[in-house]
Image (spheres, rainbow, N blue to C red):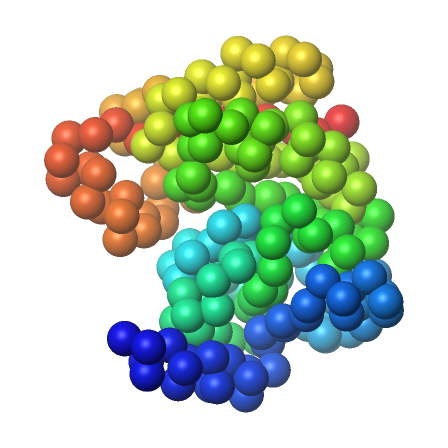
Length: 220
């Protein structure tokens, strides 16, 4: 397993659409594409982030379905990001990129108003540490630094606790309008992107009869 990881880390360095910067690099110098992602993608299409993207399954699938948008997957695990970066390079996808970083540093990669939408798919629900949840007020304040006003945040999770927490505590406190909310996505009749793409683990949850929750709300 260690050999596989080392090989993947080495191959990650060859992917031009995978960006890995240390905390020191981010604090000493501004990220070169901050405010200039349109130059990397070669267009002014909307930028959509998937936070905690893992192997990039969702990022890749959305980019295939909507080539008129640019997708960036974000995760701290390089061995996981390798899969998404490799697939996107093998398929010569021009609307996909990946960033290896902690979510706490994500605002250092994007300028104000540069991102149009965020997906948070099956994150760690942090049952004992609400402040570390990716939909907490702490993180929403962080996202507001680079999201366009009126941008949507999508939460898709098997954790009813995280869904309820976001819907009942975070959204009312911030006054974020809810576009859609369901505690059982696949029984709701919803027909958007949330049901068009499934991750490996999501398929496992569904096979176990576990409902998937979905929430879409708007940042002011």
